[in-house]
Image (cartoon, rainbow, N blue to C red; front, side):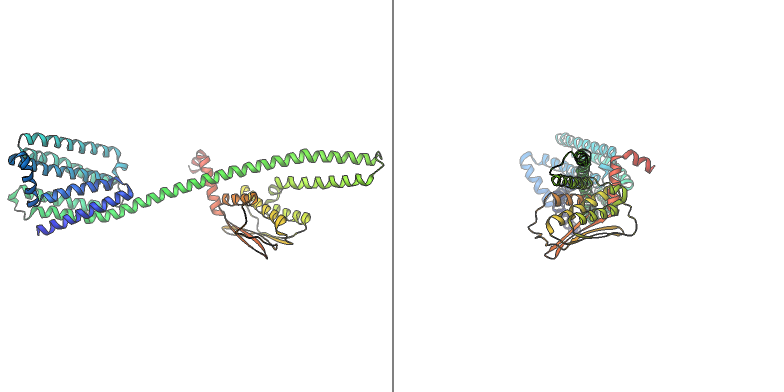
Length: 474
């Protein structure tokens, strides 16, 4: 029976050395490195429990240092290997239960104690070897090392029960069984009067039980690590997306500021100069100071009128005050009527009956998208009619611009400045753009999720004004 359980324990150790090595290589989590080292030294210890292996090693050492010294050396080494695998097991347990993050002061204190014990028993092993007194080493192991490790074990169980995540339950059941069976095996080996049958079978059984429960905890721990990685990855992606949106917003806001500046200069500068020229020419004509070539003068006045009208149109397109005065639907309706008058293209405009209450930034970007799409209709489509639709289906806003023009090859079309501006604004709105073109016409459909846009806007405001958000929350 003892040999069967021993073979099972050996098989489990080899399996988990391989498994923990692979997991450590994949996750780079320290707990699995320590578990790999623990299993390696535990495997050495288990092999030493086989009489043939133990005495073969002792005889080989005896050829170098003599039989008496070899006996003492092997005996001390056997117990020091136990200290090593308990050392790595403790480090593994501390990391596996996340005590290195959750209770840092306790963690570093325990690590210092473990290192001190390892160093002390290494030096003490050398001393007892030269004294040829392995019993002294075993006595100190029994009455110093084991009580200290049991104290650390109990305190760590208490800390883990309080702070660690759900994977602790699998681990704690396994480690309690392991410690219980290991102590039973130790006491049974050194106190024969208790008449415990096959004491080492208890030790091997404890290893098997601990390994089974650890495998369950391992699966849960890997899940937790992957969940945390996914959470961090999502946060990084969200942060990058927010940075990209902020950059786009800066560019688009800068563009709007420049548009307003140019509109003001056109209105106050060139338009004012043309109006002054027209006024002076009208005075000359009224006072009959120009008698010849009256038709030429009339042509000049008509040209000036057209120039003034075009400048007003350009100024309005650059900075449409109608958005502030009439909202998105009103401004878009005026835009469609102006294009109809200037370019003689019939434009049907459909918009919701209820009044839309949208953020001004959103209204400006949607207006600019529609404006750019209608400019493309005028310049490239050779269309006779077009259709603009703004539909509201909570929580979505659907914007459609459709014409009956000649269409274009979507595979060959290049991303010009106009289309780039449209795509930038679509990204800023976190919207979806769908394009469709054929010889029968072209259609652009933009879908905006109003809830997502408002949530992102609130997140951005809270990032920019953390003090204001904190006051609001309080």
